[in-house]
Image: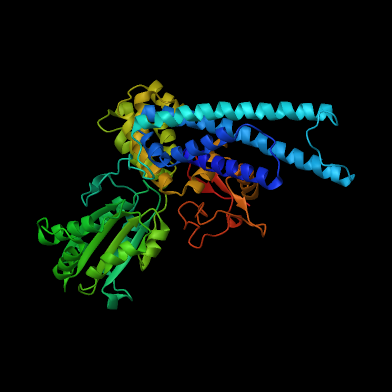
Length: 512
């Protein structure tokens, strides 16, 4: 998250130094060495920030280091703003003197003693602040060696749970319609039969139930009878073609392949499925790199007509890249179903008296889940160990960060870590715009153009020469909860609708 602060600081520092050269003015003298060192340290730290941002999730010492870096970034931002304002004041004073056909302002104690004295004091003040910030950043740069950060590489510190095809159908609620739709598409004919393999995608927010829905369809009796071979692969990130090919072969042949090279693996996959009608589930796909998919895809095209590929992903761009013939957007659950999921977990093995005493509070806690089944399960699990009404009321009235350490850890691991995977998948320029929204209270209605102006004022976005506001080469925010994300054509930010966030930071409503 610190990367969202550091990038604008680097850009602003470079811009101010270039501006002084262009205007042939040296308002802040004697700091060239500090500025050069400042830039050097900023670049060195920036190169490891992706890794540091992820490690801080689990490592408290790294979190403290990142917090210190953030504090210094804020100090630097203030100093650079002051420096930039000084240049602007100089230019305005110079323009005013030119209007009156007078000599350009230069610091001369004979001509303008008061003005120049103020200028000297201001310059010295800025120089001292730059030196102070440089010393703080130098100390932080030295400390980074203690944590073993990797250059330009973000190690995956967030645990990605490996899914399987196994599911306990007795605890699944509220996906009957979607299940029927998926099964129907798996069993039905398609216009793509000539290509042999018809792809279907399930798209939705992390924790919304995509994998569960795929598991239900995979284990459906009609589906099992219809396909000669069923294969389940948890793809996750990164998209490893060799590992995926090995997983496919192991399930087709009943044993792990002894091959290593991708070429040999794909040839064997092609041979093993030739003439067979198969179902392949690719769960949790993240890559948007079409080249990776195109390497794997040809090995699957020699199968019998009616073969299917079922893809689950959080990203509409992935579904588009993989050429899925049908896309199912997984929507949030109703409050009633969320209550059912919560109650099933929270009231497990409780007496009738306990149920009657706690149900009214449980309904209110379940309403915080906002249609997210993962949240209902996690909060239900949290309440299993709480026996008194006072404990339940404490959770109901607390913000998540107000819970005690054990409860907060359980909620963070269950809900926030899976959602952080989506956060870290965003480009850094989008992350800093997203993080800025944390300053607003929950359920605050954000006006589109006001929010964009705030982003520009913070230096997060740039205004193009044509007056349009855009993020270069980045998708930004979604049009509505669960709908297709913008950014397929790197659309201009002026087309972003207004947004509203709920308790969990998910976009819920849009306003004009």
